[in-house]
Image (cartoon, rainbow, N blue to C red; front, side):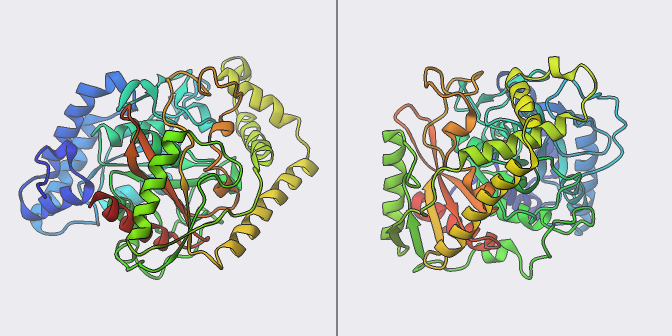
Length: 461
């Protein structure tokens, strides 16, 4: 297979291979990607902050390490972006909001930013998010509308839509997003890339997310291998997250290559309650059929829980209200109008109702734990629909009123805190990407990545 010669088109693994061979330097790669951002991002609005000078300083330092034969980490010199919800020393973290003062100060790195720096990666800038990452499309009063590289008339999805658009458009090979209800997997499906939500707590977070037990961080990439390498960096411990999991006993990059042939896969095309676009359903069905022909034991099976949207939306509203309570006076009139409604609802919810919603989440976790005693992983579509026009919170003329109504495959697995990945498996007749979701038991992040890598291989052959 011919490798791309344009650094902006290379994966992270391909860039490291080129650095190792002396065929390319981190400075050359960073310059190429910065040029791509300057050329293309005015149409997409994937970045809310780009810092060429700082990026090139990091790239030059990495180049020196490679020339000396002492690369610092797994992806030393690989350019990366991060969503503008992660604290980043020296850069404002505005979370898509006009109510957050860019003057700061901004003296602290989040665990994600710290791990990326320690590995020697090149931080290009920060990607767009809806205000406080509250919805499944990416537009905000601060940064405007982020668009899909496949068709800029369409949404990139959200809330990590800027990261997905950047990776899909060649504006950086990898990015890090957050996922509280599908926010990594939704835009990955819409933009045709890989998006992985690991088990809750696998990637440390600081400060704690107001969305609490729903909140995850995750890698976004063009390949499962890149996502696995990035997981080995992002999942390193950080003392500031008291909910973080213990360090893994192995590496994701090694476990990604394990033989998964013969495992039992539950195939649920609707989860028992989802209406799916017929074209999307057919594309995912064909992909699952091929996986069954490739020695995965595919068994039709629904997990057996009903739609938990009501409980999810209650928990989501409380988290949003908790975050917004810290905003300055007058912020209510400035925030996204849809977010204002969520804020109002969140403030009206009592502790008893909150705990009842948490009980629903626990019930799904129990049901899925039992389900996985019979099935190694669960496969579903990632999204029931392809991308729709940008600038809308719900598909136009759909009659829907909230974003969870069109994301029913993703948020249940935030409630259960399980690892779930979206990989691209085809396109519609209009050329719009379609994603397949693989869900595993809690703490089976390595298995989910291994099945995704095998699926990626099978479907590409």
